Length: 109
Image 1 (cartoon, rainbow, N blue to C red):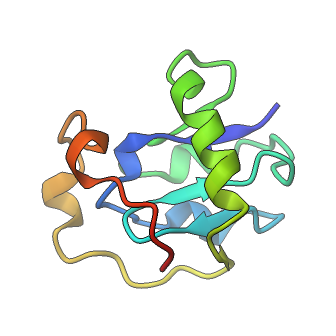
Image 2: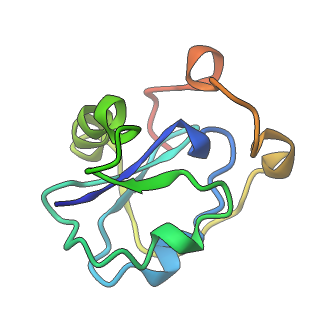
């Protein structure tokens, strides 16, 4: 099992999850973070730390769309181990639905 970052993270990137991850399995793209599914130890400490509720277990139906995305981009984007700057407008984007359609970027940080 693993945890998965969903589209709730797009344009928010609060990164509170990164601070508590004991195995450093978060990777950062231009507009969101992802979790490397082969590195995640399923401890679950990251899930309650996410202010955007963007992290779910892979057993959650919301993870179906995002597990392959997490796996693909964790192999491309740089690993992060410390909380970095949060976008100034993160709170404004936190509860916006369907952000993937117009805000998801495949670019690295």
